Image (cartoon, rainbow, N blue to C red; front, side):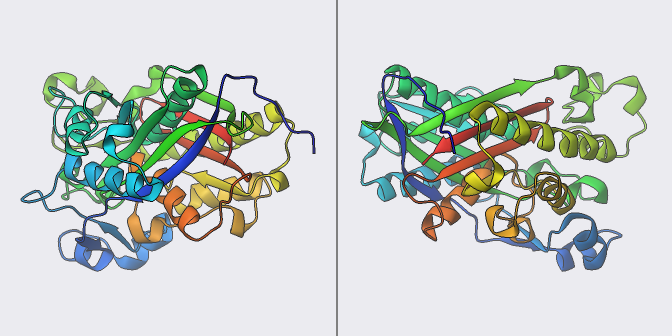
Length: 336
């Protein structure tokens, strides 16, 4: 195996990870009671059995993200004051003014760290991880808190089963920091998008934001709309392309990668990715059955699970892959 070299000023280490998951659960059986669907129908098409559901009376995007970042800091043996930057990857922030990141940074004691929200839908965490790696490698930051957190159930119209069965709530976070070993961190990264297909997956806030062709859609304004077949085709194609690009650019093979950390969109999309790239079951974690599609949170949740189970050790190679509304996609090959 010929290993790629990154000639940066510093290496980048994942120092800690953490979760911020709501206790509430929304099972397929629960959905059977409020819409025309069944556990069998959902499971067969998506692989989902249940998803986490935050309580809007006592939980928020900021509270879940804060919990995840606090846990990641504890795992890293650090304090909020050690952070130079906080990036909140989300498409469901509680507000835009102020940003969720500013409130999260204040909650963990990261003042006066820089803080901003990064909105790239399901790609947000991997986008943010790429930004954090670049900032640390360049010497512009030493330690960065990177969060993927979504409160999506409040954006679902449960009168329509096509979209609302998919999504759940939750948060994951990572603390990345400079390391003397320059081989650690991103060996290759991709951060891309194509806004020409924005109408395939979007959330109109009022009638003026709905294109003419979608005016008869029964999903109400304020809730997520998706062209399922179009997104499925995009995801299946893009998954294969991105993984192939990463392996080619780094002169690596699938067997060189210890773990593929892939966005949990749909069980069939994940299975197609495994088949097309000869990825064995043990190298691509699937947890969509327990969490549903948590958008930006899905990859950091997987990252925390793998690290907690000792399946990502120092020196291992990992590939992060995500795609989402925008349309957006992002990936990297990372030496842990």
